[in-house]
Image 1 (cartoon, rainbow, N blue to C red):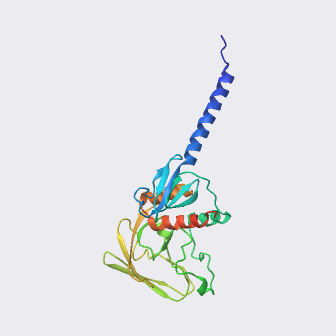
Image 2 (image 1 turned 180 degrees about the vertical axis):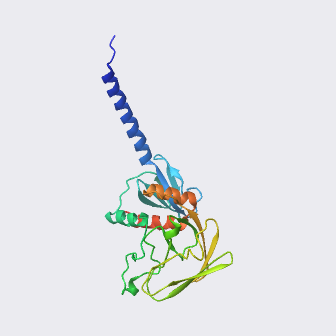
Length: 252
C-alpha cells in the first residue's frame, strides 16, 4: 500500500486550502448589496439588503434600484427582471471622487473643487466633497468621524451668512463669511452630543433643519465598509452622497 509522504500531504492540503479560499472570495465578490431603492418595490428590495449572485430582481414601472458589487454601482430601472450580479464597470474618474469622499480630516482650506470668482458656475444642488462635512441643508442622522474637527459646509462662497443652531434651550450663531465654504461647528458653545436634536435655521434655508449626530469611530477605509456602517447607523444623507458619487462614475 502506498502512503504519501509528509511533503506530498502538505502540498495537497495547501492546494485544497487555496481552492477553498478562492471559492469563498469568489462568493463574497459575487454578492451584491442594495444601496438605494425607490419606487413601488422599495420595500421588497430595501437599502442594505444583501443579494446572492443567483438572485433575481423583478421591478415594475417607477422602480429604481442601485446595487453595489465589488465597490462599483449598477443602476436598474423597471419594469423588468434583472440578475443580482452582472458586469460592473466604472469610469476612471470615479476612483478619485470616491477617494476624496472617504478621506479623513478635510481642511478649512479645501473648497470642494470650486474656485473663487466663479459664482455663477456653482450649482445650488452641489454635493459636499467629503462624507465628514456637514451640509447644513441636509436633515437627519449624521455620522461624525471626529467631533473636534466637525465642519459645516455650504455649496457656494458668495456673501456673508449666519447659521443659527439650537439645542436644549441653548443657541449659537455661526458666521460664514464671503469667500468661504466652511466653518467649524461651535463646539465651545454647543458641544457635539450624540442622540440629541439640533435645530438649524437661517443661512438661506427655506425652513429649519433638524440634525442628530451618531458616532462613527474608526471609519472604514473601504467603500463596502463605509456603506455597511452608514446603513447600519441610519446616516442617510451621507449614504446618498456616496451613492451619488459612485453612480455618476458608472460606465454608460
